[in-house]
Length: 259
Image (cartoon, rainbow, N blue to C red; front, top):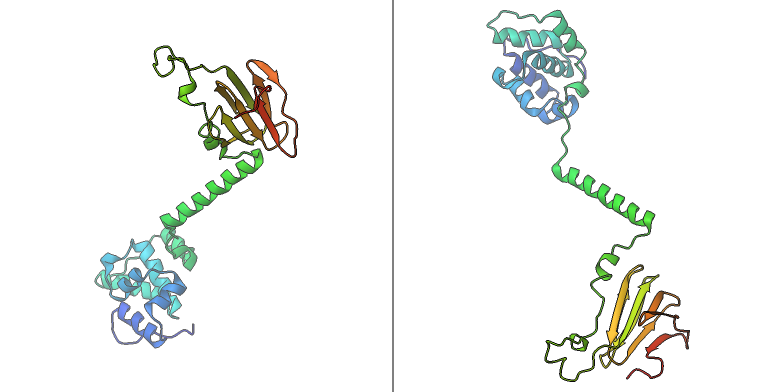
């Protein structure tokens, strides 16, 4: 910006700075954007509101920077500003403090600190959590849905099949369960189960899960992939059913078909 001289009239320093700014067709927002001095401090300087300015050392640096931006003698303007506040007497700064001012008269150092909104911080943290969790799943090949399907989708034979001598519904000649089939799944498996005369039920079991079914007359299981489970029938190992026209169908007992 081309240097100019402050008006010669005995006007307050703040008013002189304001007139210089207006002559350059600048708003306070323009000055704040270029110098990084806050609007509140610029208004306080032009209005000579000393009590609204920060400590003298910092305020002096702001005044020098503002005046130099307008092409004025920054140090002379700052001396006039504080001389007016002190009733005409000049209050020189100690050499060490003056040296610090000289090294801090850059907009980057006088700029107010950058603030980040809480929403932005929360968004960054959420992104880091999602990325970390996704990386964990991909690295360990873990399916979180197994937590919900392993235990919540395991069927059991109807309560009426269980024999108990104290229960009148089971002690009046009803045959107690005589078939027991245990399965240990070596793969994530989808199967269809039919116990006695109950309608078939399709279920999903995760790898490593264990299930046991009991029935009075028949157990029928249909698998959709080979060698996906280890079976034990009434305490003895049972081979996996063979492939029959693309189906792996197990009927127990083997001597009669399921109803």
